[in-house]
Length: 422
Image 1 (cartoon, rainbow, N blue to C red):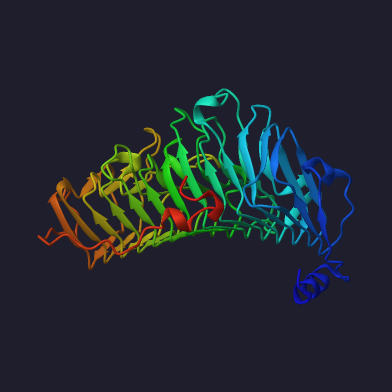
Image 2 (tube, rainbow, N blue to C red; image 1 turned 30 degrees about the vertical axis):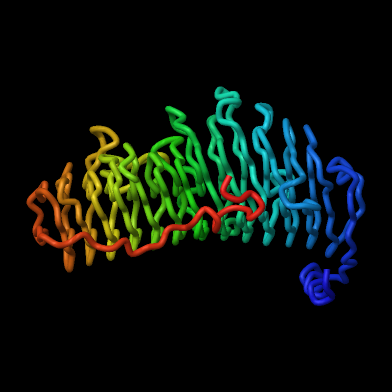
């Protein structure tokens, strides 16, 4: 480690950093190792079963000697807590059914990680070899200001969200999930198959301030919510969703920004775009191409709300801004007023639909399932088989097929470099 980095860690942690490198004979040797701020702990090449890794401290790096060659199997897990930690290059393969959380950004409920990074790590499983009746989370992010970067999560088939952000109060959150790869999550057949969830019903009123950016999601089919937004103030930017049977769902909370994401259905059934619930969301600059979902999985769906809704119910859509999106050859471009059940009677209100381009000449433009009071439509270009509903400000044109304005996140740009495209 260079002197400048040592000095930075020393200042960060409040004391002088030793900056020594300690090579461990086995992952189990971490438990008895002596280390301090600025130190780097190196795990050996090999396959190791049923190892419980725990790293507590500040400014410490734990990494594989060769990225991807420290392979942890069976009931292996990792917990880390403290400030400024960095975990690099670990591969967890086929987590066992007794592991409820494979990786946790915490030691326990009182000892959390902050300003720490998990980078170039992967959890990979054979979907057919998992105990489907067991529930687990693969990566649980606690604390504040943490980063999940260039990691991969492939093949989760049992119940439980792949990556979860847990919130406790306004001091938690502020995490970054970037450049990650999420692949091949088969259909679960019930709730609990989300790929990412940020918050939960009880904490949905909190400002999580998390960012999910430049990630690639392929065939994430666990359930109808690929990403489940359950908190406020989150940003979803520049991600690619390819052949995913579901939607980026703003399930609870307010003020999300969904910007410049690409949804590619390739004509696969049930592929969807964005589902909107709650207040003051902005959905802008996205592209939806060849999606074949409808209703909950339309290119853009606006849900009806439940009067006097409990925390886990459906909040009313208010003041959403949907602008500059491009929708090409999708089965259901817009569904307005989708109802979870007959009790959901409050329609989406005061929505701004501006400068969107829809080219779906074989589809009807709007599926209108309730009234839409206070909506404004301006500057849109719509080519469709039929309008589907008489909505003030909505007219059809005969325009040529637009270019897809967003470049997809490539497989080589998402996940650890050492994992490649496999």
